[in-house]
Length: 219
Image (cartoon, rainbow, N blue to C red; front, top):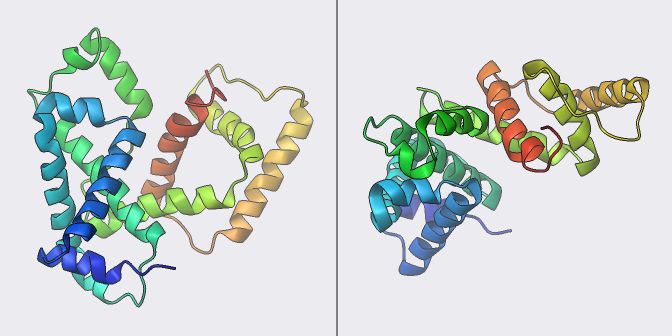
């Protein structure tokens, strides 16, 4: 398994090789595309957003340097979580700009605001470690879930926020409840730490958007 610690620390110092820089940049851009943020970023900054985003990631790593240096090993998963949290912070920065051209992304500002409320990741005015903790919890919990768990989790998360929720087909309400109780028990047993309230909120909002809505488990 590849250790990314030295690469990340060299990146913090601006001493990364060209190959390492391309690896980091390509990982950032892939996450931008996967998250659906590319159109918004290019609409505001054009192609310059790539270098701005890379600069923001470097700044984030510098702030985390002491913590990163204390780690014996940094794997791909941890590196990816850094990248993901940076992309979301960059998107929040865009949201905070009053001159952000909503009309260029949606037919109307009202429609855009609705879409935003349904898809925005939670972003907090917190220290970098706290932001990262929310992202880490999201991926830790995803690793504990099987695909067959998605409809069940989506249904019960949906019921917390929406009136009309799509119940999984071919399963009775009673059996659905039993599966939900077993799923909660399994997750509690396998998760090795207690997440913060903000991390749970982050997971809920992001899972509803990225999994439940995207794959049609909720309307």
